[in-house]
Length: 91
Image (tube, rainbow, N blue to C red; front, side, top):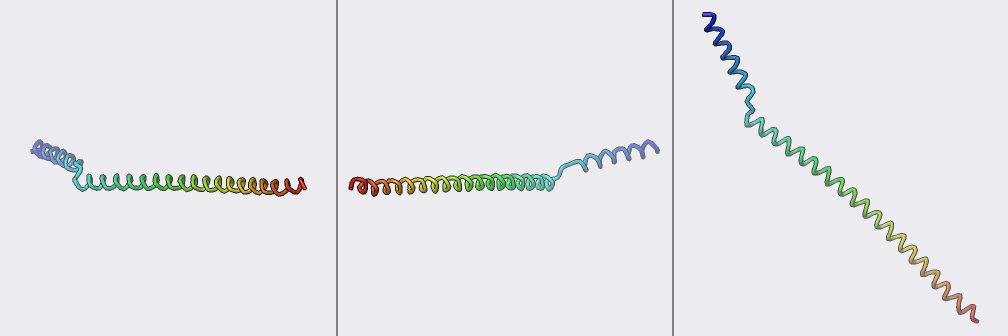
């Protein structure tokens, strides 16, 4: 009788272990959702970083264009000034 009860207990223990270790479809779906959410979050972070870099590059280009324009205006003003002074020197 003891052998039958011990054998039955052993079979039940093995059965519970095997059943409780199975991954259900629900758990697989949850894992897939979590992985997808992580991928979306990572993509959003990458997009944000790319946008920040593009904004910085645009700002740098605007500053450079402003400096070039300022230099061009100064050079033009100097040329005009020289042109005005030349006839005055000749007279």
